[in-house]
Image 1 (cartoon, rainbow, N blue to C red):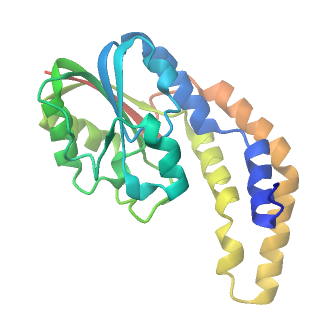
Image 2 (image 1 turned 60 degrees about the vertical axis):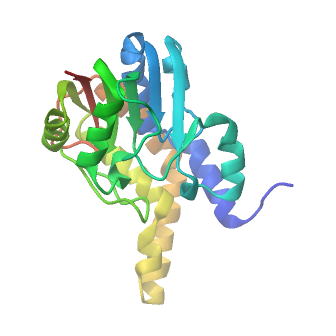
Length: 250
């Protein structure tokens, strides 16, 4: 049965019309890295494995997820896609020096002890093993467990303090990509309507939001243009919504 609730229809419209610049940039970066992903890999917080295609050259693709982050229905769907169910990333059920690589996409911000997390990754990697990690920087809070935003300098420091040599630290595009990502995040949450206390302010905010919804197809084309222009921009780590870190265990 089709769900005709207004909120559901709104999110369907947003999913249909928006250009997902984060996903586009993530795929661009992983496409460049895929040839180096070989051997036995662990994907921490893999979810429904949206990036599994880039691990095609790996001899083994292992995954972790955390049960409390999913509803009962979501848990059932992920059961077959999860190798290990864990409580956090600070204790991994993997032997010392047993992995050729670890991937971790958009998980670090919910880890309460980042140094312990990097130490645990170093433990399970073989010498020369690779780490591919992405983490939010200039981006709104998205979970009650969302704790940290790490600069490129801090990510490098955490990695080096735990036995890694950093091979790259990249931004996700530049100013345009960050601005567009923040705008699309706002469109999915539209908080200003609900924060207004006076009814007139609520009406004005709602009308402005409706206008943006009408303009969304055009704005999505603008997002696509920004992606084309900035997809190879990797040096603006001072003003980016996301950061990619790659490193090797010494």
